[in-house]
Image (tube, rainbow, N blue to C red; front, side, top):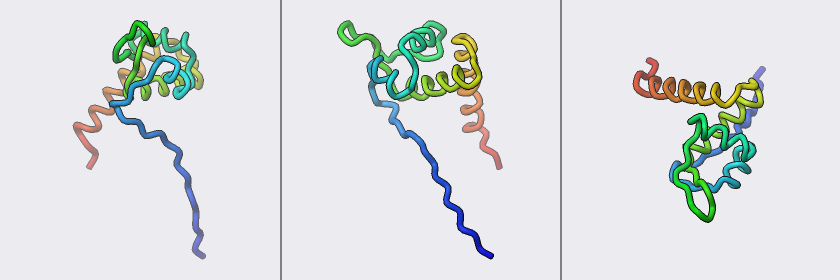
Length: 103
């Protein structure tokens, strides 16, 4: 008997060159302004630039890290310092996997 299964994948594709304001980053990442500022303070995310009018601006890398940070904070209740460490370690793992692909 042949069974047919359908699997749906939901993902967000973002270019690294995108530029987001603090409000936009909060909206698309699901994080609060307070969380974003805590993550900036701990080095988990880094603003691309700071404007006198709009405040900090962020790129696609910051968006990816903010989304991961929010999930770590929400799902595992990790604090800002732990999130910064976890994100750095996840980035190192990705770099090593890219450098040494599995056979």
